[in-house]
View 1 (cartoon, rainbow, N blue to C red):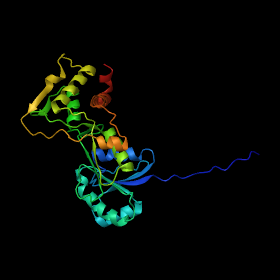
View 2: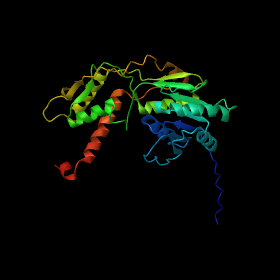
View 3: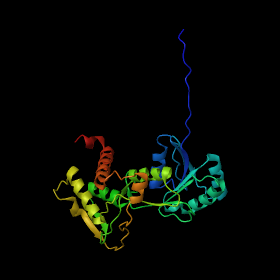
View 4: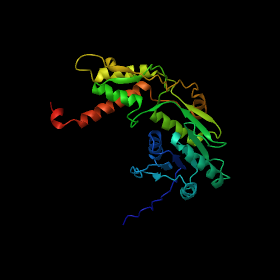
Length: 290
């Protein structure tokens, strides 16, 4: 009989339990998936999901609906032993304000409690980490956002509308770079500090749309031989919703060693490829065989 050495099992608990306020939004969902993917963090995603189905628990991610009631929020923090709080999106302002009040009560002696506030949420309190960023883009972005809307219209050969004059300059930031930066801040950010997330790659709305058109020309040229730029149309609205973000990510780079890795061109190329794959998958089998 062969003697077997007993297997020693060592349990490594998650590094942190992070409550994400605003977990149902574009950036919030991505951040929850990013943090929970390797088991290093336990993530509690809180948002007003309303009548929509809650996302299933994946790994260490647990979605929680609502919790606008402060007592319920406090009970959740105690039950989950939350030690880190991040607010993602403007809709998380009220929730993060309530969270911060209870964080001070629940963790009066815990100086490692990180309070990350994205999108300039209000009421975060003294000692909170403030994170600012420009225009986010990436997979699963809202269909009405500039980049996915332009890609969809270009591939369909439909007019591409740009608000006049189209000269606003978004500080484009890919979702993967955003999640990577937020992880660095959650782990090693300094309480009370302000970090700006940027790729230093500002490009006007019109220039961004023109670049998308040129990239689509390469992979899906129009049957009539015309360029996709000819589809650009200007709306009557003169609102300029974008501006250049003046702050460079110097502090984030120097203190935490973060660098943006996804260029705007590479990010858009990936989105065009994904959109083309979706269109191809939606075609009837008979059409695909022609």
